[in-house]
Length: 330
View 1 (tube, one colour):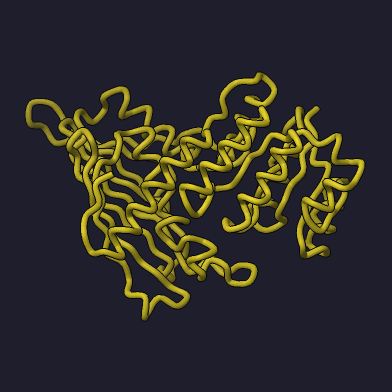
View 2 (cartoon, helix red, strand yellow; view 1 turned 120 degrees about the horizontal axis):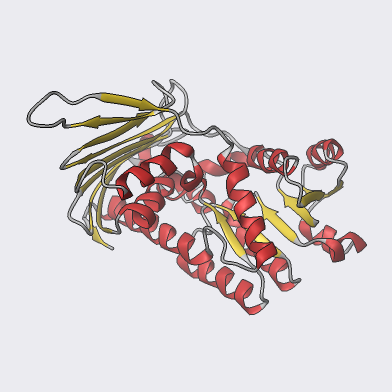
């Protein structure tokens, strides 16, 4: 059984810890968090041991038994934590974004490769059932040739430890932390993104809120329209609309659970709406299961460091466009 150490007992750390309870091949052995009471509480729930940080765990005899480290801490702390784990020969699953700069991401990829450990990154949207079904239908030709892609993602401003989301030098901001979800999915699974142009809320009015609109073009010629917000007071939601030559695929998390397919119909007849409900299973559990399976079988992680680097480069390109006011070729 794989022995797992969790670094970061925040919201996503709790989610991954809960996922491990359903896995017969992994055990949560250690929880690390500088908020020691928080670490102790989560560790107690899982009969694990609590530590202030990964370095403290690394100095404990338990460290020798650890196989996998889950990195669920603020983005600006990813590199040092991944590096420590990799140099000790531990496989690493790191939350997205992999890093704040491409150089940091490449160093993380290299150190894991140099020490022969797996590096997986938590681009979880690839595992959401709505998006799995979206990819399946597009691959099956359900809507023909894609012409336009529209996405929306966001909600209220994310309040967290030391307000790190609000500090661009720590989180990367809305384009690197939030929009990266849709950039990754579209670029990796639909069609490569070749250009981006961004308009963003002015810095002078960004305190505890943000909004960005990104338009672009895919390699297949389709037009891209993406919205990301930390100013949406009605709660978090996400959605998409893919329009093609034969129909449209649409989803809105705030309106209906199933993905909906609108077809153009035959011989001019009115199209029909076909609601479908994909299987319900936590995408966080699915992505972690897939990564741990790769560790056990020595296969490639479902989302590699190189995949995450590509997504980061796209996010940084969108940010560059927002800062310059000009389109960026990817």
